[in-house]
Image (cartoon, rainbow, N blue to C red; front, side, top):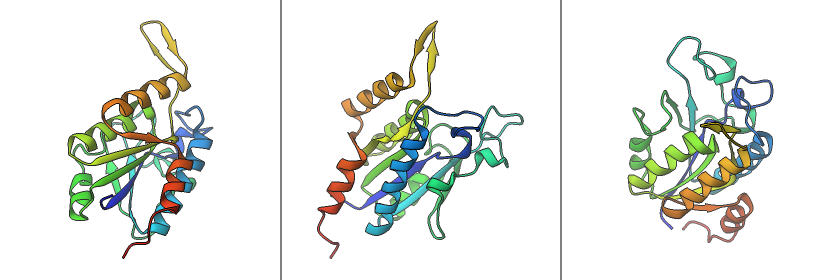
Length: 190
């Protein structure tokens, strides 16, 4: 395994109950993400937080400067942990994320966060396209009910469809427990 980074995508207040854009299963996904974040702090791997703000007035959620756009306490960044502000779905687009990963010699990118069908999907595909080895922790990500052309898609099915697509060609897709067990069995860094 190469040098690894955890990229925590958009675990922000508006996605939680009472926020402007609540996701299905957000509490459990955020709890799992918090466990992965804590494991990353123990291993000393690079930990990068992504925070989304829409650069438009009256945004549907993540309005610039709002409490809803702030990182949720379950995933709060600590001093010294990079925070990348993005204004697009893809965390690599018009941000310093790729430069940050490359400056740190990162080869393996681990992704947790929200939304499975948007920003997690975009970051995973971009990371893979840039040549990183990508792993998505599926149960540390959340989605919401969708609708297309009159077809209602429950969040669990949207999430599963996107995880299946990512697993097909873009990433290794595993559970929080699988990841934590793998980290626990790694040899200490020399």
